[in-house]
Length: 226
Figure 1 (tube, rainbow, N blue to C red):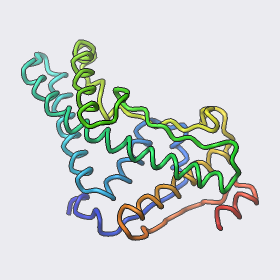
Figure 2: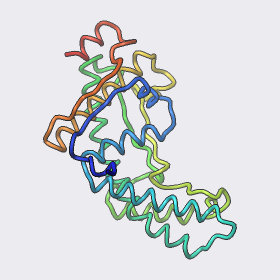
Figure 3: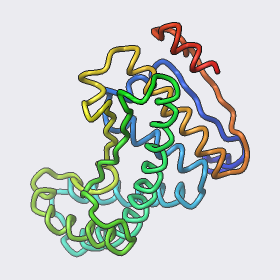
Figure 4: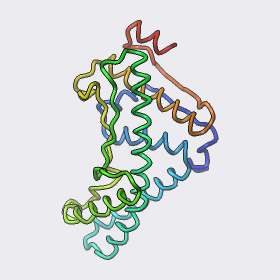
């Protein structure tokens, strides 16, 4: 069976020690967090993600070819823009909810300061979150980046280049957060992911944690367990 066939069957939120890499690891880990959460809540999102990945692979293969067919490249960009725009729109809305929820959870555990911030950093940047504006912005960016993509032989703009910034009181979490602060922030994000998934599906997902409490002081352990 395909992964997509399982979506909506049993939803789960997990925490493993490697999830701490969400703080200072590559952007792909943070995109995976968002993609997993949204795919469990919406099969439409998962379908769009799969379509985008297929088109992106085809475009990158063309960019690596000895001779690049410009008309075919235009076709791929025309197809990538609407599906990429939908992904970016869904991510923007989700990360706004996740940021609010995670900040509230974090404040309950450690107090109002420092405040946890979760911010979407889309590629290209989004000024207007209307679907037409997001798609139009992506189309413009694809045109603008065409020469650079041909030179570097890879796709340089689109949801596959998105990132998520994590901060405490606007200071980057990876640079200024202690190990305990980083672990607390990731756990708050996971708790927020759980709450949002429950609201979206109407059912409590499985909550699977491994090695949760290490590196947390006694107060934070009590707060988390409560």
